[in-house]
Image (tube, rainbow, N blue to C red; front, side):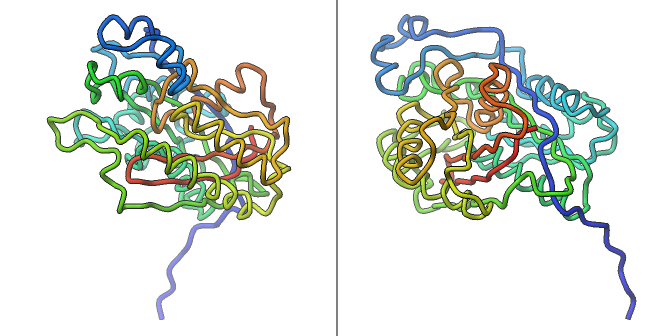
Length: 325
């Protein structure tokens, strides 16, 4: 029988670099109150957002992904030519063809890389991180650039206060490389397709709609068990987690999940990302954005154990434990 060659596997994978990008334009709650029936107090009480960033009309999703991705590659101490694959998690490309990843790779200088987009909405970055980890561990790629990027303002009705106060634009990125010991734990992921109509874009001429209260109830009851499952799969106790970075959907959701984790043994000094306050909900970009912002603020250190969890439209969810670079 003819034998086929296989690439050498790596015993583990890890995040070796981070990067992020946000547009310059800051939009406050007061700014939104000029165009819709809302006010600062109403927004803060319901979603916890104080301000968010909106891209300019001529600033594309690919532009933002390039900025975040290039920073992550530099942070990893790599040249673009060291990257073998580029994954862009997004649900807001203006057109499905061509994909974002190939354009991003070319503009960063990653030549002849495998490049594809992944759409798991707000869970997208965690899905892509798991995919990158498996590519590295299998020996299919040595370094993978993972980017979560969204221009949600292209898909939001600016007069709909149920969505326009929440969603924003930005990009976050990580480079995944090989490791002698696992630095990215097994993914705990899944979906609830029977609830798909809770968050949707009905067709190419429609805006994002969501059943806010139903999504809130689902997230506050169903996501903590997923997070705890990720901790279990990583083979550690929840008390060993230093940092919790959930999808930045809503401050009340973030705090409710953190409270449930502490009830199950998470430490009181657990660092909890609250990037939603000044960044809004950036869907697949929110987890890497929040992580990079925590690092920039000095709230986390290299070697810290972080629990990442994404969840959103699909409905889809994913979480994993990682050791920070």
